[in-house]
Image 1 (cartoon, helix red, strand yellow):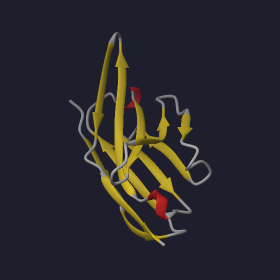
Image 2 (cartoon, one colour):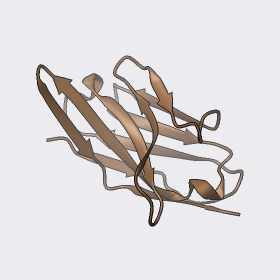
Image 3 (tube, helix red, strand yellow):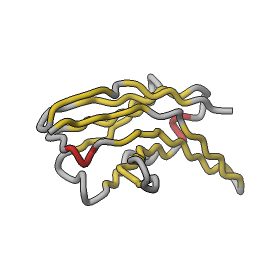
Length: 119
């Protein structure tokens, strides 16, 4: 069982920055693909960014050039640096952990952290 705890959300003005953190329990963090997703009220949960165990990253078009995902395997943490925030970035941000070992896939979600961007 893996537990994920997000932190770093809050209220920020448009154009500002926030850094989200997600701390993972367990000893297989280094094998995981980590992702950040977000869900605005009344909308589906959407991909924001992912980072593989090898460090390859992928971003939603809406955040490219503004957000940066990174990971620290020594600390079992993944980060999302969010710059030039816009009101449309307002959502609950969730951390996701995925690991594939042999033929088994395990997937875990954090509880989410609220990000609110005021205009």
